Image 1 (cartoon, one colour):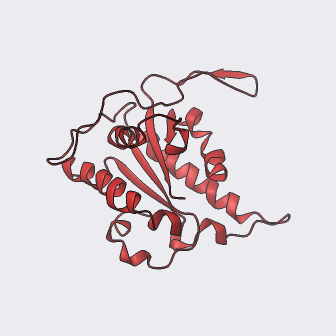
Image 2 (cartoon, helix red, strand yellow):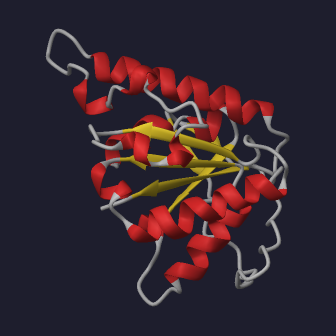
Image 3 (cartoon, helix red, strand yellow):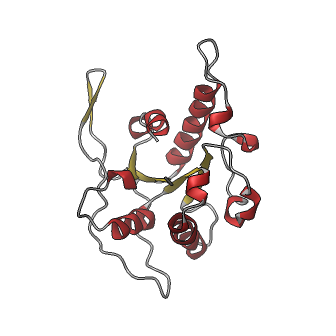
Length: 193
């Protein structure tokens, strides 16, 4: 997770993106309500695909169907964007119908962990940089602040409207101060442990 988040961090400046991951939750917070609120408000849903993520009933039977339901209600397989990144090799990928429609990265379904990362060669960083550039292009094509919480589908429980805890704080990078705009695109990172 820290590897992926580290590479994605420049997007918060280059493409006016704010990230949220369930690892940002604090003790005593209503984790399910905050996860649902983040999914319901995001522009891009990044799923870090691993055996753990695909083995998580909550991810595969609750979170992914929730994002796909938003796409159906928006009459689009691209709004919000569902962006799976294959982190480690997984058997049975073809058993998940919802992984067939989005254009999973890295290309050719080769997991990030399978790319060489040695002193003289760092293919993994090169591939991850390509993914970051791809996400930046995707985020720039979205109108800033596009996501509005999609009303829950019939039978789904409405979630509290409390704001999802995104950074929104000033950041100092190389001596420059950056203030995320109030109309940033929202990206939800989902990781299964």
